[in-house]
Length: 325
Image 1 (cartoon, rainbow, N blue to C red):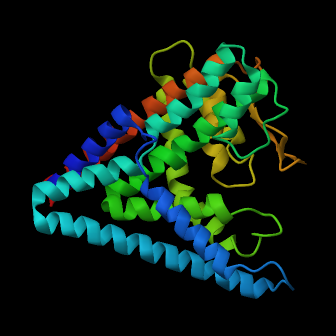
Image 2: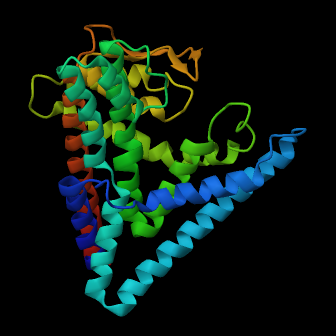
């Protein structure tokens, strides 16, 4: 347990300091490659479609990806600790660091901020297209800024707090299993003609594994908004969270978005274009003021505050468990 706590903290600090260097091949890309390979082999949409067959293929996708991810993670971690406890702790720290995405989320979103501040709208559209799934080519400055704020708010849960919770509970093995579920959902969990049946199991599983973490993430973001700083409103973060936390097709996605919208006194969400088609969505938050580039920097402050509070709470709980074992 002591080695686990050291690795848990070290991995978090490495993520804050280093982030995801572009020259380093990320393990999640391997998971993505596996998903793509299975998708190519198992999903045939060229002939007559069979709903049950596609659904069963989607179940096999989940089973194979989770089995492979879990097996590789266990072998690596056990191998490290069998070799030497210190080596195992170092390996666990590196694996923990690779699962978290705090700095990466900030760096990528701040690229949008920098392009907007330089009055380079085309550059800002291209930068935000790297971190969102919607069409960005026709967004104005406020639309680009809003898209960046929304993705940081949502990924505070998916990219930071949720994996942090699973890391605390089950170390890198459970952390990588969570990332595998999250990656499957992002690749095949679409409600379009191709993936509606095939990706259903991955999408539902992602809803399940994120249900509690999304709500914890929102609570942490509300707490972060109550910390000193006139640019945030903890009271409004709590109010909008209670009112708008289910204003999304997903039971989880609006949780942190609602807390963020209230904290920054913004209106987020609403209709958006995906693959050239307008998707109707309810709004989250009140239309008190227009979204601006500075809101990207502000939401990253909330991100970092939430991450630090979450890390500290997890460590305190782990220490408490260790004392009573």
